[in-house]
Image (tube, rainbow, N blue to C red; front, side, top):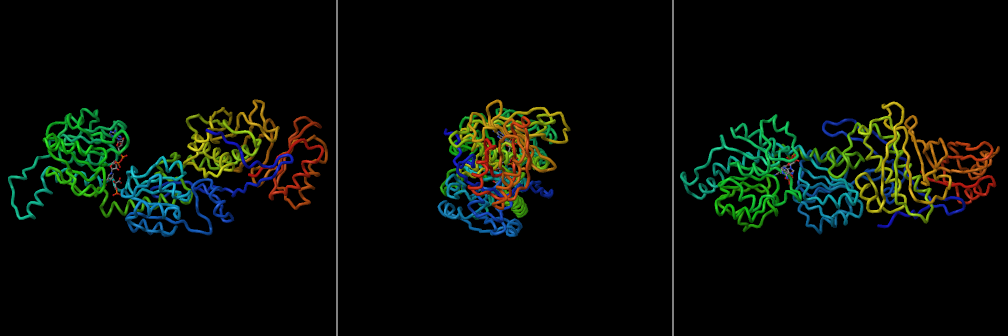
Length: 610
Ligand SMILES: NC(=O)c1ccc[n+]([C@@H]2O[C@H](COP(=O)([O-])OP(=O)(O)OC[C@H]3O[C@@H](n4cnc5c(N)ncnc54)[C@H](O)[C@@H]3O)[C@@H](O)[C@H]2O)c1
Ligand SMILES: O=C(O)[C@H](O)COP(=O)(O)O
C-alpha cells in the first residue's frame, strides 16, 4: 500500500505557495429531540463552491445557504415522514426503479431512503460519484444495503429500528395462530365452494413449547405475547442479556436445545453471513418431528429447498412465511405453493401505525445526518453518545486543525506512514472516548493532500487503505477530571519536515494543541512552546532573538495590507533563538513571503493554512 506523500506542500523558505482553502468550522449542539439526540458538526459553507464544499466538509453536512439537498425516496413512505423531508429538502419519490435507473439518478441525490425492496449495491455508491451522503433504511433490516461499500464511500447508513417492532411481532403471532388453525387453507377452501370441517382440524398452542430464535426487539415481543397465549417459551440468542429474558419469564437455551425440544419455532434473527441458511437439512433433521416454523425475519436464514424436503416428508408439519430468499419469490415456487405452507408478501411491518412511525423515524435521522448530525441510529459509524460529543466538540475542531497543520509541515518528498496521537487527560482512560478525535485528525491529515472526502464514517478505513498506522496514547495530566482533555499531540513519525524546528527530540513532526476558553490553540511545535489561537493562516519563523524582528516582519505584511490577528514569540535561548508565530487573516502573496524569508535574522519559516 503506498504511503501518503503530500502533494500540495504549504510554502516554506522559498518554495511555491499552494493555498489550501478551508471553511471556518463551527460546532452546534442540537437540542434533545423526542427520540434522537444529536450533535451538529457543521461547516459554514456559504462562500464555498460545490467542489470545494465536498472537500471541506468536517463531517456529513451538505447544506449551504444556496442549495437544498435532494432526497430520493425509492419506496413508499408514510406522509408524515415525507412532510418532514420536504421542509428541509427537495424530495423525489420514484418507486419501482430498475437498478440501472437507480444508478442513473443517484449522482443527483444527497440522500436515499429505501425499504427492503431496493438493493443498495456497490454499483449504486460508485454511481453516486461522492454526492450521496446518507442512506436511510425505513425499517430494521439493512441486509439490502452494501454497508462495506457505503463505508468506503463515506456514506452514512441509518435505519429506523424501533417503529415497526410491534407490527412485526403481531404479524408473527398472526401467522403462528393462523398456521396452527389452518385459517388460510380453510378460507381458500370455503371460497372455492367447499365445507371441509374434518380436513382442517388444527393444533392447540396452550402448553406447547415455542422457541424464539433471536431474542431482540421483535423476538422478545413475540415471546411476551406467546406467553399470554399460554405457551412455554424458550429462546436462543448468543448475544441477548439473560436478565432481559428472565424479566419476561423466558429461558435462554443453546441452539441445539431450542430446535430439538420445541413444537413451534419462530425466527427473529438478522440475516448475516453467520445466520445465512442456518436452517438447513441438518438442522431440520434435529428438530422434533412435526415441528411448525414461523419466519418473519429474513428468508435467507432458511435453506428453502431443504425446507420443502422437510415439509414433503412431514419432518416439518407446517411453515408460515412472511419473507423469502428472493422477493418476490418465483410464482411457481414449490415452497409458496406447498399445501402446508401459508405465506404473506413481507407484510410484517405493514401496518398504518408502523409505516407512519418508521417514516418519521427515518426522516428525522436522514435530515439530521444531512445537517451534519451524528444520528443515534447510525449503522456504519461509531456511536458516540450526544453528551460525549457535546463535551468533546471544541476538541473535535482542535483535532482536525492539528492534523491539517502537521501534514503541511511534512517535506514534499517524504511519505507519512505513522501517526501517533497523545492525549493528556486527568480522566480515567475508560472515561474518554477518543474515536471522533482520531477520525478528525485523520481527516485533517488526509483530506488536504488527496481528492478523498473523509468523514467519521470512513476515516479509519481511509487511513488503513493508505497504509497509515495510527496509535493512540494516554498520559496522565494532574488536573481536574471535569476537563476531558488538557492537550492533544499529533506526531508524524519517520518523516522529514520543511520546518526543521517542527521535529521533536524523538525525530517526529510534533504539534500540540489545547482548548483555551473554548478556542483551539497551538501550544507546541517540535520542541518549541507557542501560544496562538488556531484561526486564519499561520506563519512560523525561527529567528535570531534580537530587537526589531516583530516590526520588520509586521512591516512586510503591512505593505501588502495583510492583517496580523495575533503574534506570539517564544525564546529558547535569550539573544540566540526564538520562534515567532504570526496569525494572519489574509493569505500573503508569494513575493511577500519571499521577503520574510530574506530577512537575514530569519533562519527558516513556513506558511500554513488552518
Ligand atoms: N417481516 C418484517 O416485515 C420484519 C419487520 C421487522 C423486522 N424484521 C426482521 O426481523 C429481524 C429481527 O428484527 P429486530 O428488530 O428484532 O432486530 P434486533 O436487532 O432487535 O434483534 C435481532 C436479535 O437477533 C440476535 N441474533 C443475532 N445473531 C443471532 C444468531 N446467530 N442466533 C440467534 N440470535 C441471533 C441478536 O442478538 C438480536 O438480539 C430482522 O431480521 C429484521 O430485519 C422483519
Ligand atoms: O426489516 C424490516 O424493517 C422489515 O423487514 C420491514 O421491511 P419493509 O420496510 O420492506 O416492509
